[in-house]
Image 1 (cartoon, helix red, strand yellow):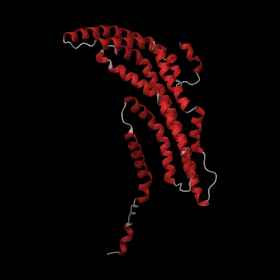
Image 2 (cartoon, rainbow, N blue to C red):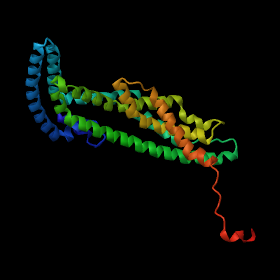
Image 3 (cartoon, rainbow, N blue to C red):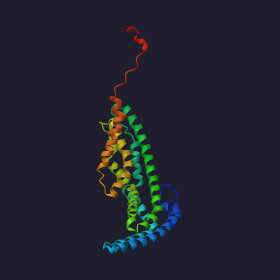
Image 4 (cartoon, helix red, strand yellow):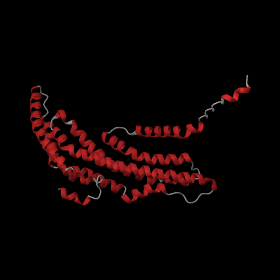
Length: 287
């Protein structure tokens, strides 16, 4: 099955379909270790259920389900991994095609060409500089997210055979559950990023530069919000997969922005200048 991914070699360390090819040797090693653990823990699991049967607390049905799940995942391991990861990429591209994604990002570089009054020239220049900085940070964050996604998925792919194998025993099956959730959550980073960027395009966030009420703080808020979308992607994916409430993320984001604005903008404007040092020689005329 490794031949399926040979056509994607142009995107090293970002194209997740290369993972099975790049890490084939570590995967084979982990598979052998996993087979040994599976053989040992299968016997341990049967003995455990037999002891539990003496207490009328056995769960042979659960053991049977775990055996089917573990064996099935090991047989279809590479295909299952690719289905989950590539399926997430297909959903992401369906929500927001790559060309539209690039247009949304580049929109923050475009400046309004019509300004009604000359005094807004300084604001226009400030907005231009801020937008180029925002674009640079957003591009760096996007690259970091894609490389981190590749790295984490590669790690999950390599350790997968061991984690799946130990999942046959009830006492260690939690690791398999965590592995599956992590695989789905990290694979879905692209989906959440596409959804967030789609929301930005519908909101037309860059229209803030065209309004008469535009000021420095509004531009700063729009740019900070745009960058925060990239930072929030892993947190959103984890919260949805784990089933936790995401309402607290809004408070965290607003709190962080308030702290930055207070420290960088408000405090320098309101801080009283420190008095200069007195000249020792200047006090000679005083008694």
